[in-house]
Image (cartoon, rainbow over all chains, first blue to last red; front, side, top):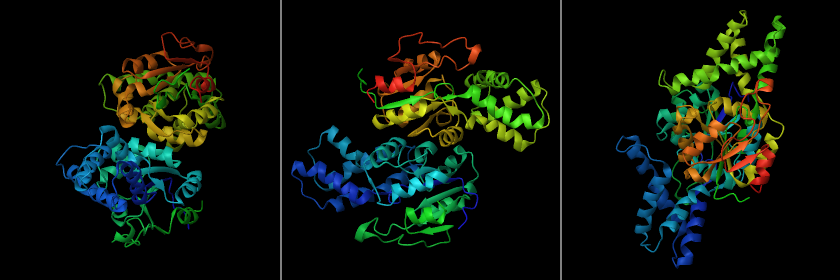
Length: 237
Length: 237
């Protein structure tokens, strides 16, 4: 399949490139079980993640100014800890646990696929995660990004058009020269509406047994793929 | 020597990491000599670069809004071509020649030094070059940046404090955790005034026989080094 004038690939990260659910569960267990807590750690991860979209929606709707995701994650963490009746945490422990999101593991195919894609294309993040989070995650997981784009550079959250278009502008490319890659139909629809090309990467286990959508591409996208290696195959890398 | 709490290294790029003068001369010759022009190509590079600071000063002084360096380079290129009485250029040829700055060669020690530094620290750009320029240059020259920071993210040019401080903020670090590395005393003085740590990297041939300053560190900086490998040595990498 031709690459059709594509110069850069930009990626959703949480769920598409990294497995946030089992990673956050592991990190929570490592932080909290030495303090005597016994929880359903995957449920803890799900509950924390469940507060993600509502928190960003307050920014997108104009209800509050832009704040980076690390701050939203911390606010949400305090709520989740309260929900689970966990109280004995120092500020340093809270900060370390909050940065679980900086230590998420890539899906097994992600690094190998990105290294192939990087030889032919610019590869960058197009995530709602902030710059420090993305940079630290890349160092931890050996994700070979050429550039960090997304919410913090644009000062707004996906799926606001400005998030995608600031990245396209900074790359000095046309939207049609940029391929948005994501495991989420809504993200790709929003990017496609701004003229970016679109690639679906299936991550049907992202939410474990709770997954309710995004099992497969539900719209016309330019590429529909099983994982990062399949995307590299289809782009001739 | 201890690294003293440093988490990230940010680099001036033109002159510090790449050799703009001989690279631009080569690119100009490759573009213009097939059209029959015989110039002093190093002089052409010097004249083009000579218009760099005055063009940015219009932005820094508030005389015009922020525009990325690719645009300033193009305006300056049109003037230099006029100075050399070069007229027969298509827009595509102009664009290609303007992107000479995307194809600058690293100094011989840069890539090897950065690869060593990257193992221990976050490494990023803190350049007045725009994001696309930095990303394309990195692809061409195999510069292994973790993150692109600098003028375009901050929407102003060094040595404005906001340029450095936006980068520090996006890394979610304290200024004292970031080491500004440059071959130019003025750049380091400005970064140091905002609390960043400072490393001088000597590039005494940057301007060829026309070099008039920056032969050596003229102030107290945290590290004074001969090149990127020496910096890696001094930081224990």
